[in-house]
Length: 114
Image: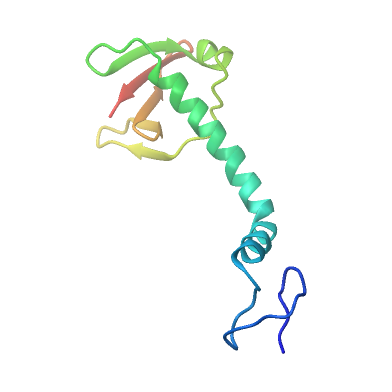
């Protein structure tokens, strides 16, 4: 006889069952994934915040200019991006989903909507 991996109760049913019910299965898996889930949750929160800050810029023809300092004061964290894209002309853009930015001279940042 097998016992539930979560609560230790006797399992009734198929011989390959590991849990007595869905609640125990979910509780067990949540405990197993807790550390990575917290890390991913925190990173996703920072990405969503960066996305919101970029999306609130005053766009004209899908472009906006601001300063690095203004983005930082709004809570933008430059360490968190979703991808990096280098164009044929050598321009490198950092993207947070479909909003990208490029550093310009004098602390300026060009924000683009893809």
